[in-house]
Amino acid sequence: MKFTAPRISAAAIVLCAVLLLAGCASGEPSAAPAPPPSEPAALTVSSAPQASAAPTQAPSTPARSSSLPSAPPSGASSEASAPSVPEAAGPAEVRVQWLVDSGFRLSSCRECILIEGDPQAWIVFSTDLPVGDFRLLSVAVEDIDEKGNISFSDEELRRFDELTPDTPLVVATVFYGDMPNNGFSYVDADGTTRRFAVDMSGYDGSLTAIEY
Image (cartoon, rainbow, N blue to C red; front, side, top):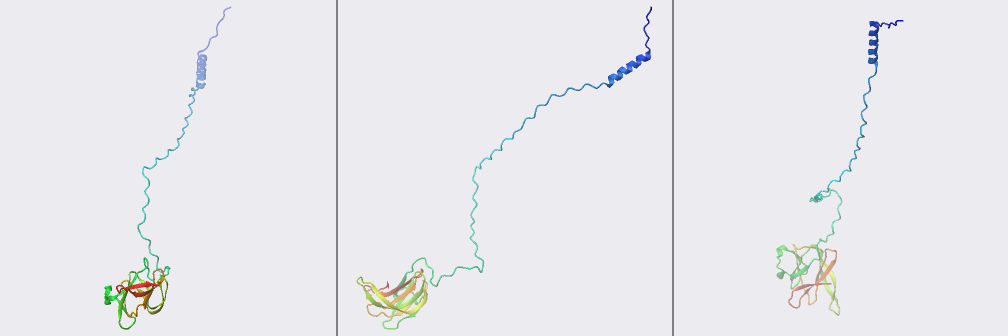
């Protein structure tokens, strides 16, 4: 028996080719290889801030103000003024001299007639610092102790508010006998009342002041 192979038409061949091409076209493309995993980013650790360098020079000290404090406003309360005793740096030195020996001129002095009599004596009181409550006294000896210290009683004859260096006081008076009969007193800068008797030196006749 003779076997005859089936014949395939050209149309079938074309159809098979079309189907084969369609199947190739519909297939998914192969995936691209995945990239290698990236290395983890390095952790950046910020360093601690460095301390600023010390200044090479010390800061300048603020200059002190040279201006004086302003005066208090008008009407502000002020401390009570000092009494009539003038302020002084220390105890005053009141001197008593004969007018002719003092070098003072009557035109520059205050004049006072204390005692009128004969013989009339002109004496002058002067001071290096102002003193207050200056008084002319009549003194009398009360007692003399074993050491020669004399106690006096006194009586006020004239009073002046003050005695100042620029205005000496010239006094006309009388000296009786050998014992002092003239005296004076004043208030010092610290408020102390000081009393003196005026005596004549038995050596040269100059005047001295004896405090009592």
